[in-house]
Length: 200
Image 1 (cartoon, rainbow, N blue to C red):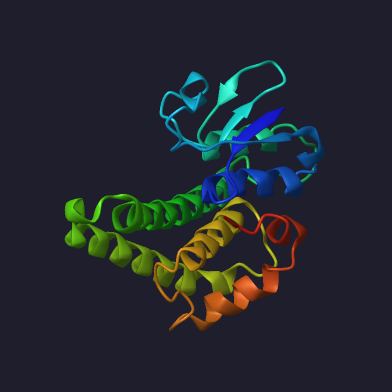
Image 2: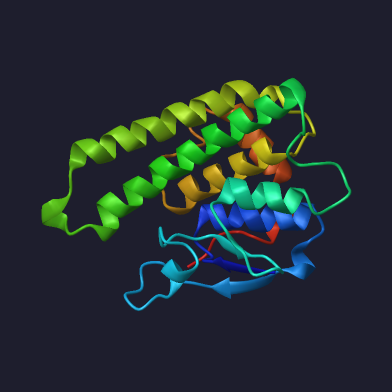
């Protein structure tokens, strides 16, 4: 399999973490891809021109990250990272959606404040996204005490969201969130987390 990704993409990181947790990382070739490059061929695999994209052994291109994660989770025989049925499944899918929403808002802030020309920026839009990030992190703060040692798709997605917010300095995510900070620090040395830290 091949994973089209960038080292700064939090969604590509989520896929890489799932692969490591599932013991599949040695079956995946990482293909660095710059979605913003003018000459990128990424639309041939994903018409939305976004990473990550997983090219399966059969040559099929899968996107976006929740789809890829579910596909990878179907390939191993260990405990599933996405619970297959019942309330546990919906709890983790909701947590993944919350974390992905935080990440999407943080990416929007990055695009608006760094990549968009200064004379075309919309401060109110950025403020709205920053507020969404903060509210989402507050929700994680309220929930994380119940996670214990569990590390499934919900917690994995939360790691990616928090790390991206920190990486891009969107907000001071630790301020006022002691439980979340303690939880994050407790999983930082986990192999899937430590091996996928974002960098330029």
